[in-house]
Length: 61
Image 1 (cartoon, rainbow, N blue to C red):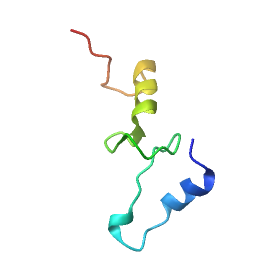
Image 2: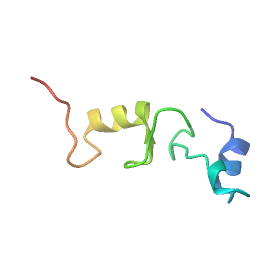
Image 3: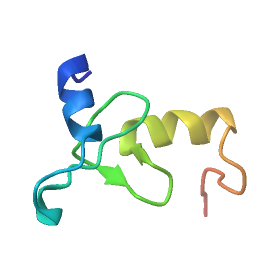
């Protein structure tokens, strides 16, 4: 979990566009982030397994 101050800093508009840090809205993690869902890989997996993301299901073959 990211600190509250780190989350708040990520929400501010940066001086340069290359400094944008995208973070998971749920936990604040910046690594393993998926833009399509605005989630990190860990939160994505939890939501997908619970069925909270429409159109996503666990694959098996």
